[in-house]
Image: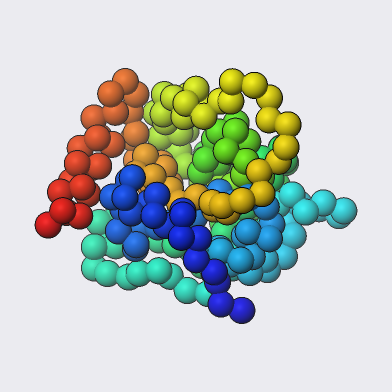
Length: 205
């Protein structure tokens, strides 16, 4: 079955973050149906008997491929054909990841939620993608994650669950940098800001 296009999520990535389509990487989804409709097929459940809290998702193909992909040895992770998505309340995600990829050595690495779980909850997303990252890169993103949590935290508890679009969210530049195991930095996040300015200038040309 062909994937659907979340036009709102796509517009946010194009206009708010100035990201070209080849950098539209889904990192959060409303629910399992949204994963199936907008991300890829659920190959199997890896969260253990009776739970659907960790999913091995298979994409039909990559969104783009170019020689520029070689600028980072980690770039293949962005559009990896097989990905692990977990429910934001699920805590045993490391064993689940190992069940999904038993041959992958993640010793010395942490498994990073591509979108902070609190932020995902505030936005109404139940599932987020996880990827391996070094502890130092993950720590460098702490300021960004706290900023996002403060920005999206609702003033009062959410009574009804969100059901409308966007059904997924694509990574912004800081999310992509962490997935690539790059230092995001704190404070004014110079590295992210410089990259964002380059993308915006490219989009205007």
